Length: 120
Image (cartoon, rainbow, N blue to C red):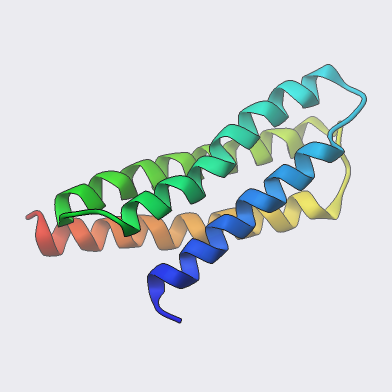
């Protein structure tokens, strides 16, 4: 499995896990509001990575990867915020934080490498 296939699948899996987590955020309006923000950016990571893979040029790939990094970082923010409220207790949120942080590191490194190799 090459890089694009691997991370297309991993980002899609993140989106699915975010959707499943959102379905568990019940009872508090605050959690539903935070969850809606999370679901928007968490699914956007996968959608924009797919778009990056289909880029027609290095510049377009870099541009899409910038969006992927931004959306992945925002996903991490909302996960951390939900966790910090203490309103939702689940080991799943810590797993998602770790997974998202790992993807963010890979995507940020990829973006940097593309910029250095093709756009400098």
